[in-house]
Length: 242
Image 1 (tube, one colour):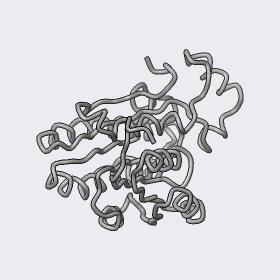
Image 2 (cartoon, rainbow, N blue to C red):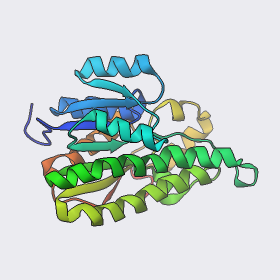
Image 3 (tube, helix red, strand yellow):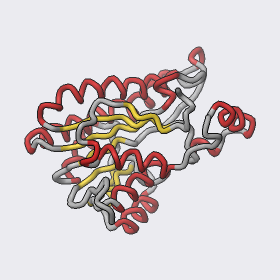
């Protein structure tokens, strides 16, 4: 294993890690040498399979609930790395969006980040070391029709993380954002072909991203090679959002 972006000896918690981008992040961090806790809300079999593959642990929690999020962080142990990846969509035009669709997205995507970061921040500050990476979206940077709730949650994550970086920097705890573009996951598999084609035409690299593309960026931000990087938003989008 190369020393570049090594996470040897570190303990990491990845939320939403049973599938898709979260799974790829868990696998990548483990490959870098970290001991990884696979956080998940549903999909126990998938989460257990990831944990077996990487020699980690799977822990069930609903991070949109403050008590459950706190319990997850405490169960994960002495964390060096926290990656907030859990999220969902409830798309629809604003005029027809229900209160439930708004609150569910905000609680799962944004409030969960507050709950887990609050639980992890004090121990990281105490040992004067830690890396937090919050997975936002290019939609949180540029917006997207039919996703006002999702865009608000992901944009809120960016402002939250920048503020957190200012609060924790003096204790050598870093906080950054990775904002993926359109990645081949279950969420994008349902897009009609014409929508996919339109996205590809707007993407300079001419392809959709893979979960591994995002995972590599997260690994870098968690590593000592990024020790002077905090409060940043790294777009992993093939140039879509520039």
